Image 1: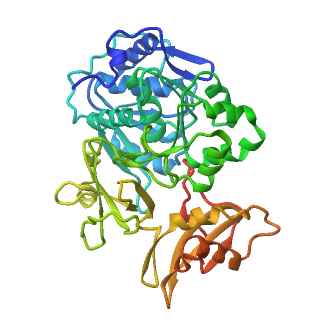
Image 2: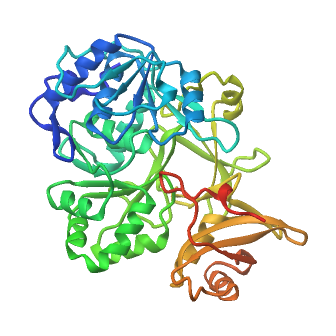
Image 3: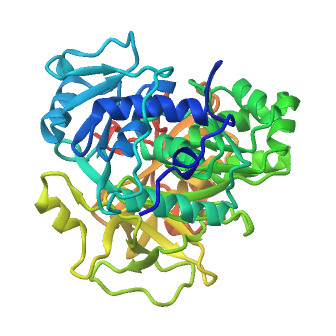
Amino acid sequence: MSSLFPALTGDPGEQVALRFGDRVLTYAELAAAAGAVGERVRGPGRVAVWATPALETAVGVVGVLLAGAAAVPLNPKSGEKELRHILTDSAPALVLAAPGDELPAALAGLERVDVDVRGAGPLPDDRGRDEGDPALIVYTSGTTGPPKGAVLPRRAIASTLDALADAWQWTGDDVLVHGLPLFHVHGLVLGVLGPLRRGGSVRHLGRFSTEGVARELGGGATMLFGVPTMYHRIAETLPGDPELAKALAGARLLVSGSAALPVHDHERIAAATGRRVIERYGMTETLMNTSVRADGEARAGTVGVPLPGVELRLVEEDGTVITSYDGESVGEIQVRGPNLFTEYLNRPDATAAAFTGDGWFRTGDMAVRDGDGYVRIVGRKATDLIKSGGYKIGAGEIENALLEHPGVREAAVTGEPDADLGERVVAWIVPADPASPPSAGELADHVAARLAPHKRPRTVRYLEALPRNDMGKIMKRALPHD
């Protein structure tokens, strides 16, 4: 297999590779620092990385991967119980951290190695590694039970980043800006390893801010990665911030992921900047599956078409494969390709349950597909597919419709048992003006007029805020059900 980072293992030069605030590493400096990490790691095994949004995390992960070990990114916000589970399950040989970082008690028994970003060591040559060797073990938050460690092989990282390079026309000339966490696939694999595989540059904001986005995109960055919460803040800020509008208008590519970007925010950003945000769809277990292409139509509310090398199909509940793409038939997304994980660590039962007999991964995401292949996700099978009055209804399209109402700031939709309908549609609303929220009848009529009468919410509940995780996804299971 070729190197994961040809720009490092070839002849690393003085081009900037990483920039976190005012801390910068060129490719030559990164190669030296990653080499120093590699000397401490030495070969296969697992290495935990205390994954703060800092230069040390990027250097540590690159050094581990080049040395042929598997990196286990740790979320610094994880609680003691979760951390102990991850460490027991993955059994890392040591933990990498930035000098001065205070590590919790759960890591006290693990050898600690501080990452020196100015260190120097011979760069390991990873070109002889097997493409099936583990590269990352990323823990996914399960809805039941402790998190599972998804084992991502080198092949998955290389294939997904190369497929995105094809879809997004991503080259070494691109400069990416983002403020994403580095313990998830989005921020770490796409946001750090992606630019390094291309030979380009990444500027990490440390903490997301619209001021930081305007500064970096206005200062030569070409791409922005974000989650819907970030783009919502951008959409809210744009009307009073001409510099932000100008900076976004000059970007080559604006990409949103990790959850669906509401159509309302798509339209507000496009109106203010003339630029369309494109969406892609992936999971920890699959890395990236689909994307709107840079040379394709940026259709709000869709996640584009399957990436090169990825097979995708929609399947009915009884296992029947949907063959006619009409934009209406809802099925579960199943995928197959080199981008997939190999297993859940130490969980052969969960691994077997996740795949069909012929190798398709069951994503649990429900979608429809248009005649031209565009995929539109309507929600999670477990929480977002509502069966009401004989209809299958996706929560996502109702949420988008609700967000178009001027009195709605945030919206979530769930299903609840109903003696007559089987399930009724329930809307959870954060009103734009808490003192004067839109009435339930007004919201029901608003949705019925835009979508269909059977999709209108039968119950409306008002909240001060929706529960969200650190990637901005709404945690529907945390909504205060009666």
